[in-house]
Amino acid sequence: MTNPSPWRATVLTLFPEMFPGPLGVSLAGRALAGGLWQLEARDIRASATDRHRSVDDTPAGGGPGMVLRADVLAAAIDAAEGEPERPKLLMSPRGRPLTQARVLELAKGPGPLIVCGRFEGVDQRVIDGRGLEEVSIGDYVLSGGEIAALALIDACVRLLPGVMGKEASGTEESFSDGLLEYPQYTRPQLFEGAPIPELLTSGDHAKVASWRRAQSEALTAARRPDLWAQIPAKPPNRAGRQKTPKNKTDG
Image 1 (cartoon, rainbow, N blue to C red):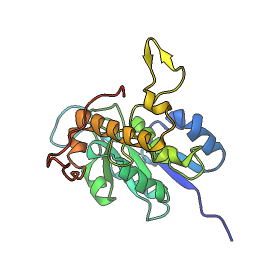
Image 2: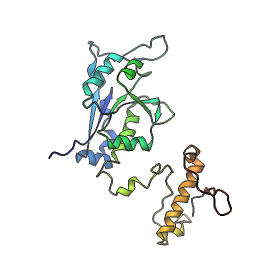
Image 3: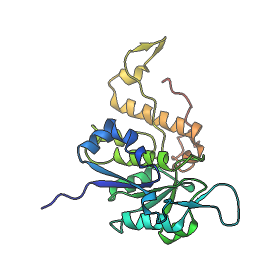
């Protein structure tokens, strides 16, 4: 019986030398060297057909910059696609925001094919014709999709079996349950006059869990009201009023 193929990320880019980059060190790098996942960076320019290896042209209708040609990029995607069930992503500031839930879906699959745009963008016809899912890592514009692709791949790889040392590390962190992560502390006990909250060293695991939940709720309500609005409301307390978490992180 053969082992299933490892999770694989294929990146289409004009700068394949940017990979593996930071993915070649730390947890992701050790997992890559150990065969827990695979990375393939392919040069879009290899699919160009003219002697100048042209990959872009001026925007139809006028305007600044250049646009990646549909014929060249489509040929690059077709040459790299492999399994038809692989998700095909385009890193784009106009895409749907990347969420931890989507990362978990991608990590459970065979691994994505990721297109990294450059210049003013990608011809819409190849987006439509190849069914590219546009994904954004934030409301800002980068020089290209490579840094966004690195972020997406790192988020997925850390969730693969055997990559993180402790499985709980992947569940007790920001966004795992819709909340931001609670504050963390470690030694020394006293730092610049600030102690570790006494409850955390009490040995009472139930109280620690309750404190951490309250802190996560407080941080989420204060910093990410968009996430907090999606958390199901708790039943009212005995006084018939909804409890509002206090925004404090010092115990």
